[in-house]
Amino acid sequence: MRVNFTVNGRPQEADDVWEGESLLYVLRERLGLPGSKNACEQGECGSCTVRLDGVPVCSCLVAAGQVEGREVVTVEGLADYAEQRSCGAGACGTSLDEAKRWRAEGTDSQTGEGTRLAPIQQAFIDAGAVQCGFCTPGLLVAADEMLERNPNPTDADIREALSGNLCRCTGYEKIMDAVRLAAARQSRGSDHDVRRALDHVRAGRRPQRCSHDDHAGVADQGRHRRVHAPPGRHAQGHR
Image (tube, one colour):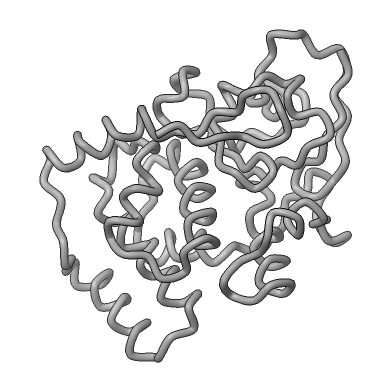
């Protein structure tokens, strides 16, 4: 089977695809994009999250044949996608139709990977939200999509958006700090707002501190929230 689709703004063609292959396998093994991680292969951990026609999905649960003619953005293309979004539609994001028309800049590498970072990627670095890094690509993709929809999220909004992504290193608190910081920068609020977000990061102060039981609840919710991609043009969310 041959599958033609767009990955990080570039048309791609995958030949000899087995009917049972997942999108995750095609991205990693056929297209050389290892950013999306292969962990549970059951849609439970969120490490393989990519955007399919603008919607976050677990690529391990998407059959390769389902992406024919569709648009995929992986963590490798996140920086260029974020720049195109901010230039084309302002800081509050872009429509699905605009996302479909997005194309990578010619200065990108063969895979669509750029050298610069998306705002959410820089915020993860500044907040110290990366440890082993295995879950990071999925968290970045999910957080970036949430900030596109909701540039001024509450802590509850952030937890809900990331509820399908598991992290076994950070305890989620630094991740929360990173998303708060990215939101403050993205909203182009006052210098005071950004300084306040940075103060939370540097001093370790958090307005709402999660207990271990809270973390377990978030992880459990993610099993029901994670977006799958049934046959058809658009992925649907299951809550």
